[in-house]
Structures are given as structure tokens and as C-alpha cells.
Image 1 (tube, rainbow, N blue to C red):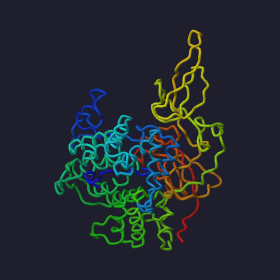
Image 2: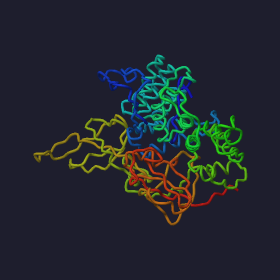
Image 3: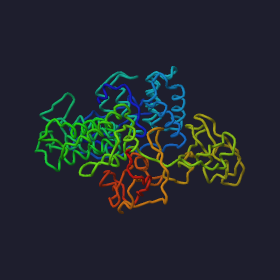
Length: 530
């Protein structure tokens, strides 16, 4: 979908690469008075000789758990099942703003979209641009992608497609999957397809889109399938015929795209299995109307709800030569079985902070963890729980400060042992789930299916064979730099007993050692499709 035709987009709930364009200088802002929207950026260069992949999740601020819950609640209130006129946008805006004030980067960008849509009469396009600029100052790759879209559409800024591509290039360099997918598709042209604003740079295009896909961006799978099925020269010229190996690779990536919410992938497989355009060159090994029907159900659902994901697709629709499990033909039965799963959330026991009064009060669902961010400013730089940093002789517990709220002063002893009264250094505390590190993937209401927690609990390393058929969830430590794209429900996978577990470098193309990942059994129930 062309960014030039999109005024804004909402981040999937959910939801990559560094594009090294010849010797391009880094983005420079001569001084603090230059607004991020006006910063000088290198021009887009489609003829990059190489590409280095970065991961967006390793560059964004850590997400506060309470802010995440507000964000997900707001997203659930925009469920496609709810008519637009029936949605409570006043509450949606309020929840999204609460999360954004805690520097929840996805909420910041969604709040900007709500402003552009006119969902808050007090704020409009200029405030949206300012909010995106705030996210840019925090180094959030998706904010650069959004600014590019604003320039393409003239949203709050003077339209300038050249600057739009420069911002998209910067976002791609920082690892944003949407920018990577968009620019990668622009580099897929060949002499036989010289479309407008298309360039032939196949090696970089493949690397960019693979980098987007490994971060869960399903739409890149569709474009990759065309680059996998027939080998191309760097300028895009066809360099060979389809082989069984290239067709298998294209089929696998389309199937992966369906798992990650790619409607075009599901539609293409519906056609390939049901009524291919060219029987001599079809991707699939044989016509299979039953498989086509199931892909059709998934395609229609993704057309209606682009936020849907089907991580356990192989439970109900494995690729050949695996047999299809019986199905009663009911749409919801198929969709629910392919969804991600989670155990019921336990009722947390109140912590000491849950018994205090505001501003020290913290809901029982959460605990606090020092974030390592310190401030010597007289006021809170943003809304968060803050406590005096260690080593100052102050035992004040963490309390909630709003942005701009004045920090307290304390009496303490200085280095010479004399008493003084004055400011101290404060440290931010993140809220985390008060669940003792349980494996509990999060998503907006309706995207996950709740299942009973299996007994006994089973966990495996990447190198082991799967001991029990079922749904398995990968997990890394909460403070791991890649936890934001590993500890996600869309990483779940249905595995049969004896099958190997996916390995990060081989199967996800992520620079993540096997030893950092543990697989946990989430649901051992066998396929039941009526």
C-alpha cells in the first residue's frame, strides 16, 4: 500500500534494517533550535551497494507495563466489530494519552493519529507533528517513518515527496519494519517491470524485506515470494526458471506471511491451491480445494481485521505433505484455533505499594523496577514513578510524578558530614507485571484465545526436540534487548512431538543466541475443528 495514499496509520498491536546508502553522512541537527521536522537528511539513494540490518525493538525506550495495559485497552475499543460511530473516542483518546505520557512510543504515534483524525477537538495536525517530533527526539525509528508519511501527504507540514523518502530512508536505517517493507518493495523493479518510482536493486531489496519479516512485518512476505520464486540479477532481470526449490521457498514465505497477518499472502495461497492462473508454473505441489477454502477464510478475516494474527496456523492448516485435520466448515472454529493463546491471568496479591495512598499508590497488578534513567532537573521530565537514586541517604519510596511536577527537596548530610536541605537526583522506575516473571504474552482483547495452563509446566531449550505436541511460546529475560520482538504471542508456533524448535538465527534471521531463548508449552490440546 503506497504511503503517499495514507494520511496516517495505526501501529499494529502488537506489531529493521539499516540501509547503508553509499557514503551517506549521519543525520545532523546543527543546534537544538532546529525542529526535528526540518532536520537535514541525506537524499534517498536507491542504488545502495549493501545493507546492514538493525532491529527497531533494540532502539526504543522500554515500555511501562501499566501504560501498555492502557494502550491495549484503547486499541480493543477500536475493534473492527465496533462501528466507528459507536466507539467511545473520548475514552480512547484519554487512555492513549495516559500511555503516551509514560513515553509508550506506540501510544505516542497512535495519539498523533487520533489528532489527525480529529478525535480530540483541542488538537489537530500541528500537535500531531509536535508529538511525532517528541518521539523522534527519543530516537524512535517509527517516528521517522511517520514524519515521512506526513511529508508525503502534506499533513501538518508542506508536502515534499523528496523529504518524505529521506525520512523513510532514515527510518529504515534505524530498523523500522514499515519503512523497510515500503522501500524494499520500491527496489524490486526489473527491466520487465519499470513502474513509476521503482528501482532495480534486488540484493538490497531482499535483505531489507527479510529484515522487516524477521521483526513480524507480514506484508513483506508477499513481495519476497516473487523474489524467491525466480532468481533475478541485481537490476531485476529474470535470471532463471522456477524450480521445485524456489517454489518451495516462495510457498513457505507466503505461509509465514499468513501467520503474521498478510492478507495478500492468504489471498494468493487461496488462488494457488484452488484455481491457479498458470497450472504449469503454480507454486503449490497440487491443487487442494480444501486448503484453498481455509486460506480463503483467513484472507477474508484479515481483510476485515488487519490486526489479526494466526501464529498457530500449522495446527489447522499445515503445508503439504502434512495432512489437514478435519474441519466442520465453521469460520469461527478455524479462526479461533489458529489464534495465539494465553493462560488466564492470575489475581495478583497486593504489594506494599498497593496499600498506600496516592501518589505512592501502585495497583496490585504491578511492581516497580528501577529503569536506570536519572534526572537532576527540578521537575519530572515526563510522567512516571520516580524515587531518589541510591547513595544519597534518602529512603523516600517511589511516587508518581506528572510531567513538569516539581521534585521534592530533602534534608541530608553532604560529603563533609554537614546537614543541608535541597534537591537530590531522582531515578525513574518502570512498572512491570506483578506476576513473578510468568510467561504471559499480552495483546488487545480478542486477539488471543484463553486456555488452561498445562500441567505439568514444560520448558525446553532451542536445541531439543519437541517432547509434546502443542502450542509453544518462546521467551527471553524481561531485560533482554530483544524481548519486545521475542516475547510476543505472534512468535508462538504449533509443533508436533519430535519436531525441532525454531532457532533464532536460522529460522527468524535474528542475531540471537539459542541459549537466550526458552520454549514454554502453552496448550497441549489436539486440533479440534468440530
